[in-house]
Amino acid sequence: MTTELPDYAPVPPSALGPAVNEHGYHVGRVEKNLYWVTDGGYQAAFLTTPDGVVLFDAPPTIGHNLQRAVDEIAAATGASSEVTHLVYSHHHADHIGASSLFGPDVVRIGHAENRRLLLRAGDPVRPAPDVVFDHDHTLMVGGERIDLAWRGANHTPDNIYVHLPSHDTLMLIDVVVPGWGSFAAFNVNSDVPGAMAAPAEALSFPWRHFIGGHLGRLGTRDDVALHQRYIADIAESARTALSTVDPSPFYAKYGHNAWAAVKAYLDTASEQAAAPVAEKYAGVLAAADVFTVSTTFVILESLRLDSGVGLQIHP
Image (cartoon, rainbow, N blue to C red; front, side, top):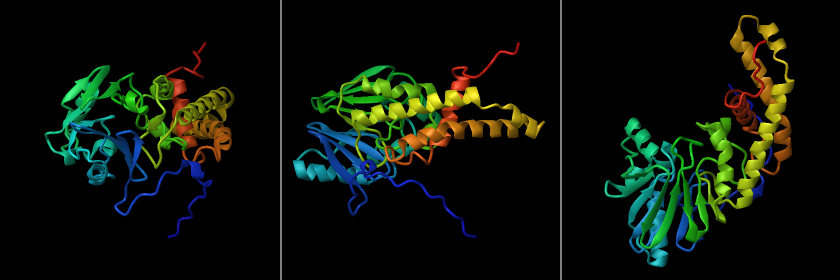
């Protein structure tokens, strides 16, 4: 059986990152002794210090290439290649599922909720962090300062802001993908209002370089601000759809099949709300025509359920 696949808009070259090497990774300098690693789909970072290497996340798709990247930089600069600390951005396996490669002696750091969630998961490849914090934590390694901050739930309950002030860099994973539209269903964010507010929180820190965790390039403040406008446009369009799409024809059509009526109504409202946003960002954000409808559905539902938009009290 042959399935005809849909066509999508071309990806703007500005959304693409550097090519990977023969081992399947690219490692590059962010600033000074801070480096980033990508396989084209996922990103991690590491900081070289006189007392060892601090690794930020350990995506399994990069896997053993994380140590290869560290070794490559160590050979070129004379820095240590020993990973002594591993900072978890959040608990999801696609970002820290290679943690166990670095053995039991690495000091792992994460939010208190990160520890709870990893202990619940009981996943041997994601050991729970040894050092935990509730709101703010400053990690000092080899004279280098790393500020870790929790500002409430966003993508997950434990997702943190990793700020390296001496390197002009912020790492915030799974909230903004520089140059791209949202991933499916608004990236399955556990707290939709928190995820919508997170870019503004990110911009409140001083930085020039942004590590978002996915795809092939680093970001800038302009990338985060662009994502912020894109999501705000979706929310505004969803509010309009909630006030203009009449649900009654769908209930008339499907009668007692309430789920069919609700599905048809929400699908129609989401598609109507997403259409002008996808058109506006075509050629500006890669794949704006791929997941904007599913992202709009999630934001529309959050507006209804978290904010009460469009819900009326029966007289």
